[in-house]
Length: 320
Figure 1: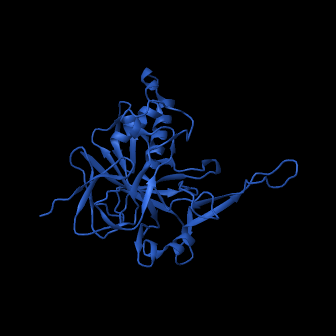
Figure 2: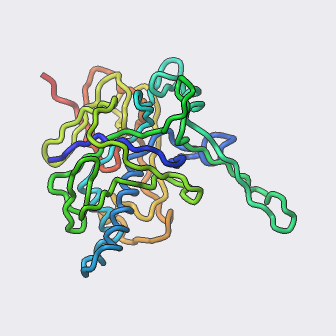
Figure 3: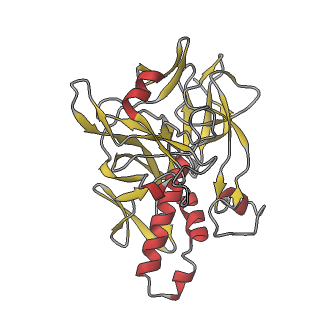
């Protein structure tokens, strides 16, 4: 059994969620939402650092990133988190006139929420830019102007599922008001999400837990799995594992990334090496239908929600 919590975070700094470069003028584009996998990594890091600094027992040796990451994977599931202005959650969807976020065109969304920063390395002798070092980083701003011109905080909204009787490194996970705690430490109070943290990017803090948010994910929390209903002709909110039998309108993306280790490979004993160097390993490449894509046709489906927010093991949904 699982408990489902709506969670809202406030951005304290700009946010960069790594994405495959595709724009000619932007070397490092950002996604316009946060993947569930980013939350898995951030919460694993926060738990591990807390336990390492506050444990006096020999078991602290077992409470490392790798073991804790696997236990977070087994006891937590994360949806994608989307930009939220307090009224609208800006989820993507493909239309006949192009991609929209919420009810606005992509260009208007980008004007409201997206910025970029250009940097370059300076040659110490000539005091000029080094060749081939010009670098542009796209990011989600932590502030925006509302329709009245007032400056407001950008927030992100989504869901976290926690297994009943969840434990991390033998420490029970507790649910309290506006918190998820281990040993009275709120593991979601503050997180560092995404990349470019050397620029101060990615700092978010908790804003609300358990409140109603305008983001609906039809899910069933019975048993060992969380199952999500895939509604025909409605935009997907998660990446859905591609299957040739599915009719759809939208786009396909190959999901992969540079990681410390691939937890799914570790779980399947496909990889036994753990390297502490960031980005040393690359996760398996898999095709997924992107958020905003619509499943069409007469068949109705449901799928299992994975720890990282992807939808896998798709099945035809029983009706009637």
